[in-house]
Length: 191
Image (cartoon, rainbow, N blue to C red; front, side, top):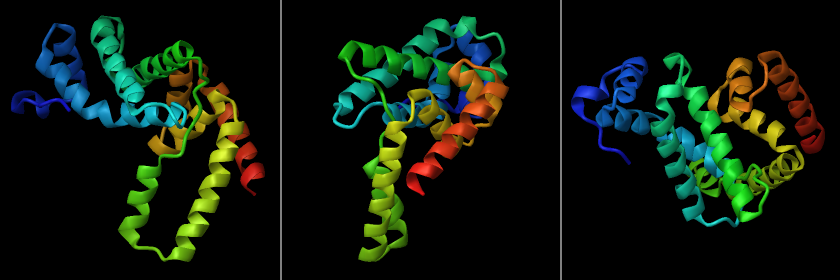
């Protein structure tokens, strides 16, 4: 994790992006600090179960290295998050091609354990959750990568159609349709 300088830690993204684009490494380190968790979550959700955790770490490092190298191509600093997620998506696809695997959404067992530990559910609740989780994971694996990514961006990160469209390289209206159809497929599969 990056060490954030006190002088850059309180700046808004636009200012940080402008400074980072001018070569300020501290400003970019602050951006990494702010967005690392999001990028890690997306990478983990898209790399298949069974992949080495080092694979995910490598992809995350690649994302931020590419973002640093290409920061001057970002036209609108307000679009940093979708731009970074587009780089993340392409890096996951490139990684999948290199290792000969198709990236799919995956259930994150650590998050499930953390979520259940906070509320101390009983064995029945855990069994029910695991069954639902298994059905949902199976349903997500049967979706196309694009549909599964749209669902993940909406559900985990609260993205709207415009941001989902940007991340997937489609229009906002097309993202609405993709999201609607993906939700319908999930409902039918999990039912």
